[in-house]
Length: 547
Image (tube, rainbow, N blue to C red; front, side):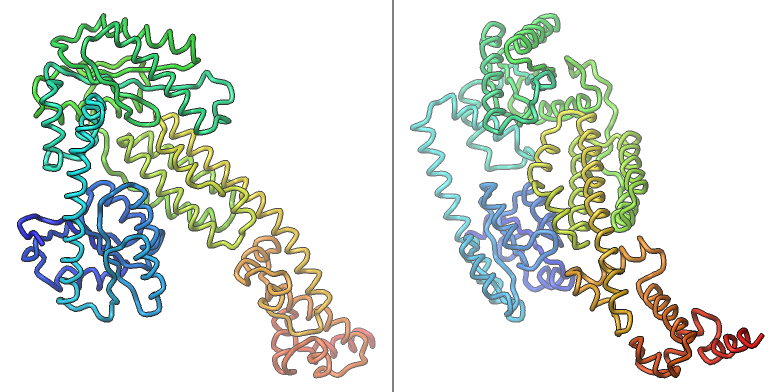
C-alpha cells in the first residue's frame, strides 16, 4: 500500500447512521484516503462516480433506485477503474457473492464492521488500484508504440477536454504527448452541431444507421477543413456534435469562418439533408489555457442551447450567467398527487408548470437535463408502485432509450419536446389504466351483487379480480364516488329493507342472511344508512299499512 498517494473514497448507504459510522470508524488520512462524498441511493452514487471518479467506493448492496449490484455493474460498463467494497447483511450473502462476480474487491457484513476489518479491506482495494494503474500505464505506453501517432494525439486531447478540472495529475502524460506535437500553439476549438430535422423518418433510423450518417457527415467536415486549415484535429465529442481543434491559427478571420460555415452547411444539406451550426472559441497560446478554452466552449453550448444560432463567435455572445441550480420540489409534489389520482388535467398542468419554470429559470443545459431525468425517474417509480404492469410495460418499456434521447438533445426546444412527449406518454398510460379500471369496477359490482348475502371484504373481491386491495379501493372510490365499504353496506341495507317488507324473517335472521356477524352490528349499520333501527323501520311499515 502506497500511503503517499491519496485515494478518493465515496461512501454509499441509505442509512445515515451507517454513513456517519463509516466516517468516524477509522482515521482515513492515516491510511492515505480522503472521503470526497457520500450518497444515499444508487442513482446518486453513479452520478458522483461519473463526475468525481473516486478510487474506492464502499457501497451497501440494498439501495433505493439502483441497488449496489447495479451500481457496480454500470460502473464496470462505463469502463471506470473504481474499486468496490460491498456492505451487506447476513441475509444478503448470496448478493455479496454476486458482487464478487462483478469484480468487487471485498465485502463486509455490517454486523462485523470493525476498524481492523475495514482497514484490511481498504488495503486490499488500494493494492488492486495500484495493479490497475500499473497495467494502465503499460497499456498506454504500448498503445503509444503500436498505434498511429495521430490517434494517440486525438485520444490524449479528448481526454484533456473531457476532464473535470486542471488538477487531474493522471493527465500529465497526455499533456506531454500534445505538447510534443506542438498542437497548443495559437489554437482554438470549433464545435460543429449536427442537426437532422430535414431527414424524413429520422426517428425510424436504427442506431447503426444514425452512426453511419454521422460518419458521413464527419467525412464531409474533414474534407472541407482540409481546404481551410493546415493543422487541425477532428474529435468525436458527443452524439450530436464534433470538435475541430485548430492549431497554428493566430487570428480569427470571421469572414473566413463564415465562409467555412456556409461551405459545410451547403454541402451537408445537399448530400445528407443535414443542417449544421458552429461555435468558435477565442485563440489561445499555451497548454495551460486549455481549460479557459473549454469554459468558453461550455458557455457557448449554453448559449446555443437557448438561442440555436447558426454561427456563434465567443466574443459576440452575451455572457448571462445560467443558473446551476433551481428547485423542482413543488413540481415533484404536484406530480405525485396527479399521477396517483390519474387526473389528466392535473398532469398536464404539472408539465406546463415545469416548462414555465425552465423558461423563467434558464438553467444550464446539463442542469435542465438532470431535472428532466429526475422527473422521469420519479414518474417511473410512482407508476410502478401503482400495480398496473400491462399499462406500464406498454408505455414505458424502453426507459434507457428515452433517457438517451434526452441526453443527446441539442437545444432548449428539444428538451421542451421531450417533456411534452413524456406528458403524452403518461396520458396514454392513464387511458389504458382508466379503460382497465372501468372493466374491473363493473366486474367488482357484479361479484358483489352475486355474493351480497356473504361477508364481503376488500381482500376477497380483490383476490377474485386478481388485483391488489389498494388498487381496487382507489379506483372503486374514484369511479363510484362512495367508497367500497359504503357501496356494499348500502346494497345490504337496501336488500334488508326488502326482506323486512316481506315480514317473513326475524331481524337477527336477516342479519345472518346478509353476512353480518351479529344482530347488534346489523342494527348499527342499518341506522347509519336509514336513520332508524330495523325495529323502528318495521314499526313504521306497520303504521303505514294500518293508516
